[in-house]
Image (cartoon, rainbow, N blue to C red):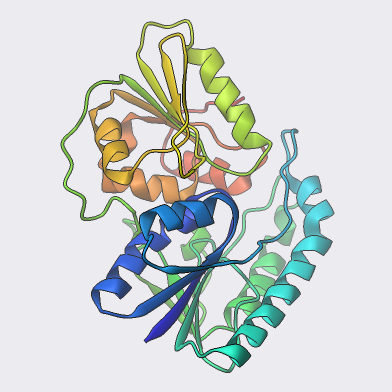
Amino acid sequence: MKILICPLNWGLGHATRCVPINRKLRAENHEVVIASDGFPLEFLQQQFPELRFITFPSYKIKYSLRKTQIFALLKSLPNILMGIWEEHCWLKKLLGAEHFDQVISDYRFGLWTKKTHCTYITHQLMIKMPRGFKWLEPLVWLIHRVFINMFNKCWIPDVAGKENLSADLSHKYPLPRNAKFIGPLSRFQGIEIIPNKEFEVIGLISGPEPQRTLFENFLIEKFKNERSKTLIMCGKPQSVIVERNVGNIKLVSHLPDKELAEFITGSGKIMARSGYSTIMDLVALNCLEKTEFVPTPGQTEQEYLKTIHNLRDYRI
């Protein structure tokens, strides 16, 4: 089959969890085309240089510097709605020019059509609302469900039952009729790893600006005067790896998966945002227990995920 994969550009998580899906499709000899933009596009180009890529803009969203993101998201809502409509029209135009047997959309609401089979990936069927807006959660869940039902299938990267990773996000409400748990997805699955103990502390940075830069600065300030040899992964995949040093800290723009996994497993401590894809990666490496999560301020999903995994309350 000819398959189009489209991850959202909202940090690297949506792109990283598409890696095992793409590997499986390639192993089955399907033709895969990837459409995205920004760092997710660059990341996947490095992972799969043999594939065809289409530059496809995501929603115009920018996080706030403040401790809540609700007003920044409300301000971005017209851009999000316009983006959903534009990507729906883009897909129709693309399918008018060439045939795809399947479209796989990671959290892009508008990538559905009756012309071909469309699959939607999300772990967040219900969206946690901030304090003061909790009463909106059932309504937001119903609106999201309307979008989910536009697709032929909804893949949930988690498992059913009590031993799950997403808890309320995908288990609180009844599943849509087209939803299916497919198990956690990690780019580190199937990689042979020999732990590298060069660094005692690993900092994993991800997410949209300006919070990505704020977290980077926070980690630098925290560890620059300590003896611990620290590696900070800046979450900026580029064709040329950029490195710099601050005291005992080594900052790198990006690393290949195998090298990064070996540093993570060999470290004594990890600090990261509590994004769902990061949690899946750390579970795959059996490193969740040595992680201190720093939720993006005002990002209710990350604050909730930190809480349910009994992680320390670290804030900036």
